[in-house]
Length: 151
Image (cartoon, rainbow, N blue to C red; front, side, top):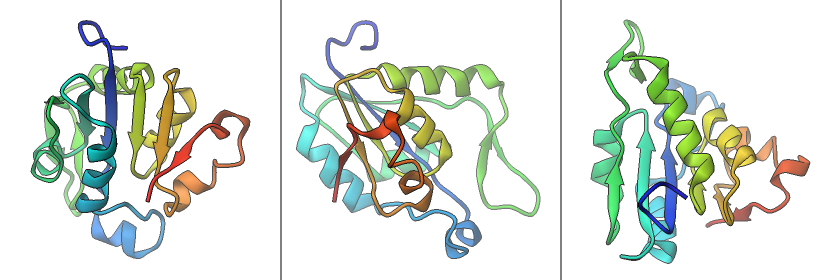
């Protein structure tokens, strides 16, 4: 639970560069798929906290009756890449990771950051995207037995 919010839902939306996805390293759910999952669980009494490496893009894709888009700090695009990375300091990344593990419910999309946050999640329910090889690789771990698959 995050301070001041009796019931919070954490959502980690990871955006990879197209080449990474085309190589099959990760398979991320589309915006409409994420929104459908959020619509099933978010209410005005269950506030959604959105964390992402590209918060502006996540904000354009996902909404809820009660929602907070968490600023990842200063970001940049590395030369030769199309992926946004935080550069303002690792404390924002650590803050986001800890907050995700403390929310009552957690929705993860794809990638290692999501997988590790989901494995350390101390809340009630973790919803995971079953088509991402990065998440699926961890599914047989003792730490993931309670994960709930979303469509």
